[in-house]
Image (cartoon, rainbow, N blue to C red):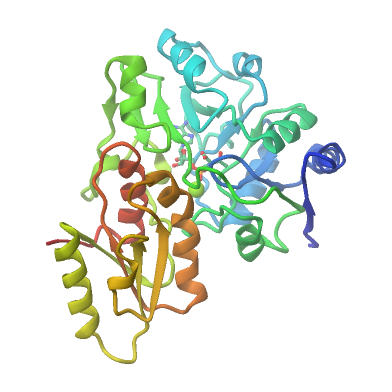
Length: 348
Ligand code: TXA
Ligand code: MG
């Protein structure tokens, strides 16, 4: 299949999104930018489109898709009820990087929700995403537009690398502002529960809701037999081919530990470090990949997946990543890093 790639900006957006909407109406797939990561979109009410999405990504079909809408009114027909707590969250954080889980209505096919009786809905802020969804006239089912298991794409070139030839079109809208997937909150049972941390932090959610449960899978590796509430959290994720190891502790201890591990490494192996601007000159690795400043966690978040992808680009065999404190945005950054590392962490 030929994949059309078109750049969209303020001047040509209507032409590009009309073309993309035509593809969606014919049952095809279009990757599009959002403020979090690129999504791989198909008609959210069409079971055949859901099937195509799973195939293109190589994703297990029990892992449900998020429905993207372009106005809050589009939510009502998709859900059984809109609880009071969700109204507050929508008021504060929609449009934006927050996905909410509701009991689904009969209009939403089980193929889209991976067989669940709940549905995840997100109203993104990115203007290209909104124009595209609105031109389609249907909710757009969209997982992150990467091959299953790879880091989520934050540039059109990442989508091209993973999915070129497997999907109909990519809308290139430049890099994604936040760079980590949306925060997911489940509102389908009595107490709101965080299923995936993101740029809307636990602290921000607590300010609005008072209190919120946190699914165990957000913080720790689950034991055999335990299931995360977001099925996607059980799969290995975000992994470059390189072996990722997190080292956590004071700056001096982390730098010393990483340099000592590198020094003892088989010389045939190519080494990397995912570091901050403040520490980057201290490492003796083959490649030092800088995510951003410690003073600016948002910068680190927005570059993390790009750096994980760079590990493959540089053929790195083993990459050490500096751990961060797990509060505010650090919780989401560490959640992705831990999954990339298969929870291999040294505390020093
Ligand atoms: O920022 C984002 O959320 C991006 C952009 C494209 O919007 N999308 C995204 O989708 O990250 P995906 O499919 O890569 O991740 C969706 C996560 C998965 O872990 C999935 O299991 C969970 O949401 N999920 C979806 N529907 C759910 C449901 N009804 N109940 C529990 N978890 C659900
Ligand atoms: Mg994903």
